[in-house]
Amino acid sequence: MDELFNKLIKNNLSPNQFYFLYCKKNNLVPQLINTNIEVARLQGEWITEESNMLTSKAIMLIKELDKYFISSKKKTSGKLMGDNYADYIAKYSEIFPKFMLPSGKYARSDKRNVENAFRWFFDNYSYSWSTIIGATELYVETFERQGYKYMRTSQYFIRKQNPIEKTFDSELADYCSIYENGGDAHQPNHFSEKVV
Image 1 (tube, helix red, strand yellow):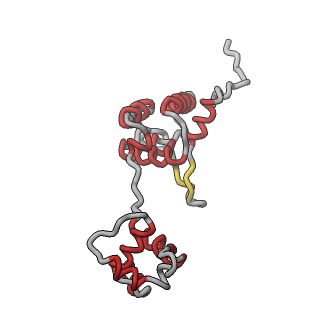
Image 2: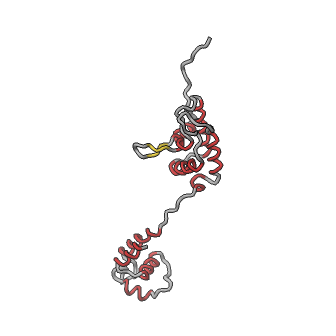
Image 3: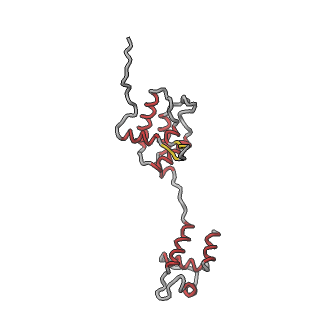
């Protein structure tokens, strides 16, 4: 708020004068101020004398000060992921085994961590929940065949930070692409051993 008033003082404007300019720009009728006095004080620098229109300086100042009042609304989980997101997160988590992976970490991460990871995922990708569930089943099935060796936890499968580049990677996005294209992440072993 201090910045706002400092800008008004720097531009030699009273709050009532700025209010009048704001109303004029937005086609509003000013309330509780004497518009005749304000127009007389603003003419020249802020309002043209001939047509009582805002000058470009006035328009630029209004746009600049308007930014102080724009609030960045945080998207809710429901808006990002759909109304039934909690049910889908539970279904997603159930796909992962309940035990500890060979890496020493539990396969199922805390649901709050998974929700935060999914908030990031839905903010960056546009896959449906059915694709996500199918891709996750494909992922877990692939690593089950390998004894879960090198499998990521449910949280890190969604997103994991690349420590060198400080960016996030998503193995889930890769598997969603494979799943949507009808592919299978598991490549059959071409070598067979004949047991006698």
